[in-house]
Amino acid sequence: MTIALGLGIRALSTAAWTGPAGDTLYAVLIYLLVAILLPARPRVLAAGLALTVCLAVELLQLTGLSAELGALWAPLRLVLGTTFGFADLVAYAGGVALAYAADRLFGVGFSRAARTP
Image 1 (cartoon, helix red, strand yellow):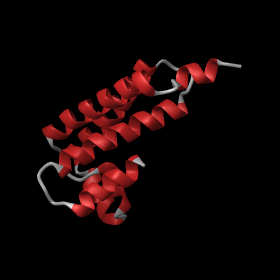
Image 2 (spheres, helix red, strand yellow):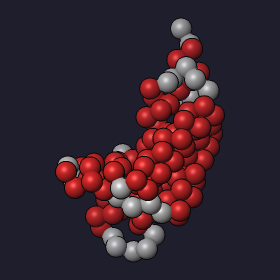
Image 3 (cartoon, one colour):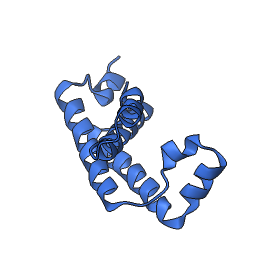
């Protein structure tokens, strides 16, 4: 659902808010993937790892490697992006914080669910 929403926002609108919204949803997706892959870990660790992955992807863009890989295989542009932007870092932090807060407030808790027999 997160992927569909992120791609849909970008496909259906060219408004200025779609870039930050897509980056925020990207960070939510990374949080969800980390939480699913490491279910027995605390949520705060999932948030930290998700933010680290997002930051690493954004910093990789400074090398130009992301753009080169995206030119070779178009779907990688969706995953790695192409150009560095400081605003993206802010959107990532917001997305991870949003996902963490939602998980704490409404989620079943991946870490608790994994520990129950």
